[in-house]
Length: 218
Image (cartoon, rainbow, N blue to C red):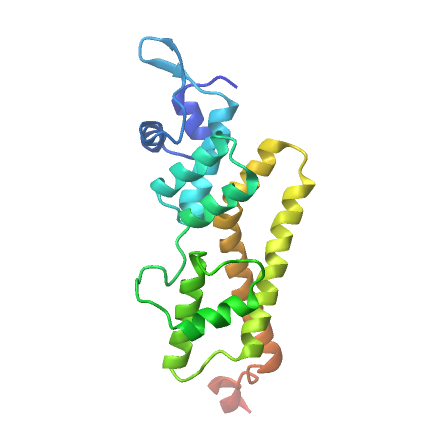
């Protein structure tokens, strides 16, 4: 594919203004110059634009975060490091406060995760959430926390299983770099759907009452 920017915009659904912005920011390579003020764009540009659009619109990643993720892709970063870059680029809920969690909460989190030191940036975020549970008077029980950790481990294994099934190094790198960003969206959405399903199963809604018209006619 060798197209002008207008066709690239139509193909990818990204506006011309956004394409030019992404080029200026360095997350998209410039087109191939083929004349005065004329450039063409190929399949690699379209693929990168779809990636950037997915990160920005689908996962809410900032342009600064997109830069870090695309740099990891372009730089041949080891896969596990690429996962780390993606994690750092995607803000977690509760990450905006700098309040220190209690030591007890930190120790509880460390007790349910495997092989992770206390300096992983998600540790204090999770620990602060435990503290908040306690403050509102509904502390997260050990059983509840352990089941959360078990579910998280299952999801993490699924991510890496999928990565290992790809033979193409470029595809592996894409999964490593964007798996956290878009995977978070998928998992959070599925959890909410599961809440609705499980809630209806355990606490079914009462049957709808007959309308006033039906009551009157009877």
